[in-house]
Image (cartoon, rainbow, N blue to C red; front, side, top):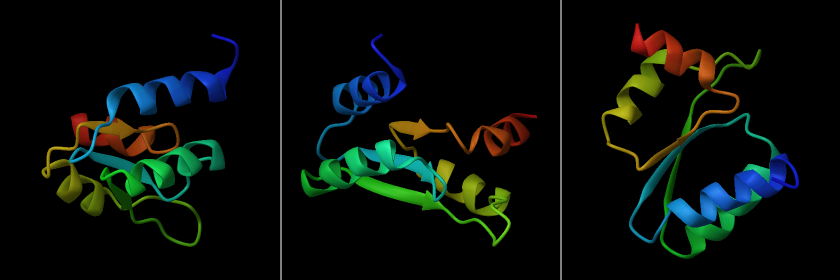
Length: 87
């Protein structure tokens, strides 16, 4: 791909449709959040995993929101929690 941001845009725009749910951490890069904000206006539901002041995400919140069957988990920053949940 031409770059990381371009690749993220291709994934987000190509995967998420109105009515879909996407799970992200509140720590995602602006390049991700900007696109998700536009997709929200088109009917995509975006759920953010809670994090504390140090940036550590809540595994409890991630576990609860994963049970809501999101179509996509944008885990660039949340990969640590997803790996822990998979164990």
